[in-house]
Amino acid sequence: TQLLEQSPQFLSIQEGENLTVYCNSSSVFSSLQWYRQEPGEGPVLLVTVVTGGEVKKLKRLTFQFGDARKDSSLHITAAQPGDTGLYLCAGAGGNSGGGADGLTFGKGTHLIIQP
Amino acid sequence: DAGVTQSPTHLIKTRGQHVTLRCSPISGHKSVSWYQQVLGQGPQFIFQYYEKEERGRGNFPDRFSARQFPNYSSELNVNALLLGDSALYLCASSLAGLRQYFGPGTRLTVL
Picture 1 (cartoon, chains in turn cyan, brown):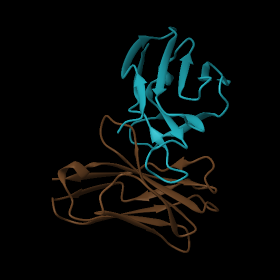
Picture 2 (cartoon, chains in turn yellow, red; picture 1 turned 60 degrees about the vertical axis):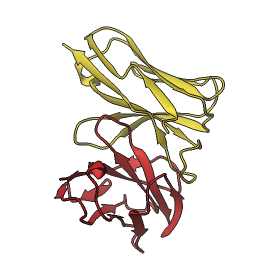
Picture 3 (cartoon, one colour; picture 1 turned 90 degrees about the horizontal axis):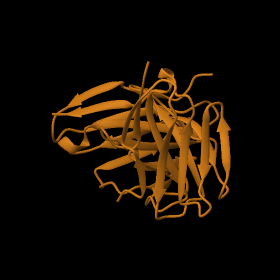
Picture 4 (tube, one colour; picture 1 turned 30 degrees about the vertical axis):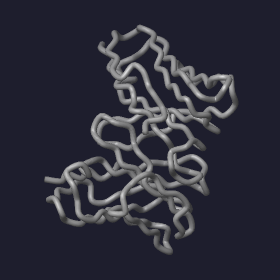
């Protein structure tokens, strides 16, 4: 059962445009993490949000955790070709069926930034 | 410092065979987790081990098993391989459940 829904699944935009990726769930998570994965590599952590309503900024990337700790968004300003990749959200402390440290991942958003 | 390493990088097996995948965590990390990532999907949690004991298990059949050794490295074993087991298998290590660092994965193809 997929507990984290990401949208859109695919996104192709021009360099310089802004975009937002959404991660929604019916479950409450103790924290949400955003990862970026490139072909042939494992996911790399971008940010962890813990508090409901929390906003974190990482250069041109802005991450927000919903007040109810069920959803999150990733906003990229002035996208660049180097932002191309698979963006994954992952919840910790949800009902993944795993132990305390098993992450529940969404299916990911495939982002392509065209020069 | 070296990151999480996994071996082999790629592997091709046939249905019914058995496979063993290996993972070496970052030095000092005592926790290792295994994930399966099918093409087009996000990773799915399989197992988590801490100090050589299983701490968590995802919704995978008993054909999947794992263990952690005294040096904190880990093996994932899959018996009676099915076509649907074809995936990227990711290992992640962490310091007692904090931030997880993922390895590059092992690409398993079952024919």
